[in-house]
Image (cartoon, rainbow, N blue to C red; front, side):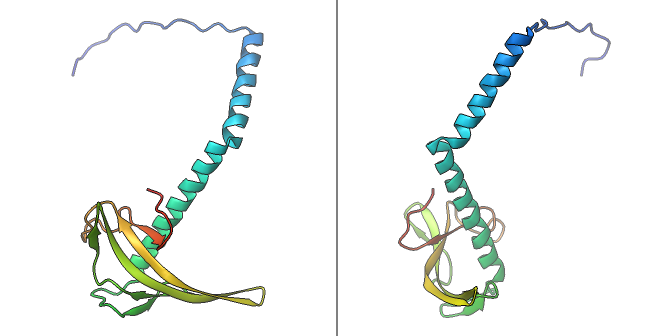
Length: 148
């Protein structure tokens, strides 16, 4: 590392008039409004939220799944949702690894009971091992397209 005292060079000063500053702030305000309400920004926010929710749900499922689960093992992930193991371990299908489960449960909202069931799968873009299994798993309902 160099030692000593070195003279610092001053950068060019930015001299803006109050009119220029007002114009900059107005343009910035317009850009923020346009970017927040554009269809591409809205769809990007929805896709990001969908991907984040899929990761959270997959991590919760993996956290509650019993170690050494065999096909047919049923376990609860939350108070209203249970899963049944279909694939004992992740399998490579194409360029991704996936493990399938059957989900079922019921939720009561405002006195109306809603029951649900279906096949879901956890998808990894890498070979899952004990060290990296929780890095970026995604929970996807079977039959619906993946976000990635």
